[in-house]
Image (cartoon, rainbow, N blue to C red; front, side):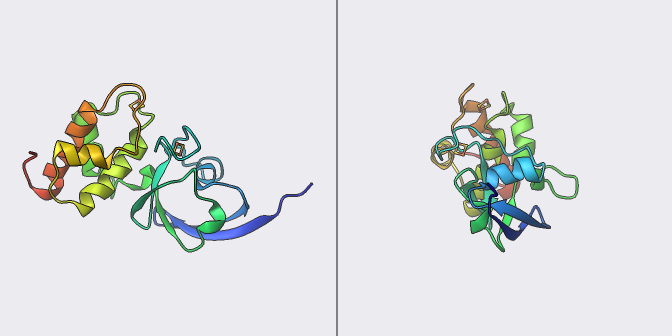
Length: 163
Ligand code: FES
Ligand code: FES
């Protein structure tokens, strides 16, 4: 039986892509299997863990819950698009510096969630960082170094001292 496909044109990391997507193809699947951007991880596939987080028009979303057919004309940023001109985003640099990578499975989603959060919130505290990442589960190690990295990135991005 043939599967109906729908042409969808969207921007991924500043690149315009047109894809013929089956109606039930998720953004996470498309990124990993059709476009080859495997930095977006798939964990629970039901909107709980946050591992699949990408930015949709600058806001964090769960790519396992979005169908490609919803995304005509949208702009997506995956972890591969966060560095600019060969320079790591301050959140990426802070993750490396503060040893927040651990096993790395939750890292792409964490980094994108924190990058979007810091863009909206110039001054942060450990508590507000913990609230911001409450939808991103780290299942292997813990949150101490992730919170430290977010505070360090805030310092770099905003020139403020972490509280
Ligand atoms: Fe999307 Fe877990 S894989 S929220
Ligand atoms: Fe391993 Fe978070 S670093 S799941």
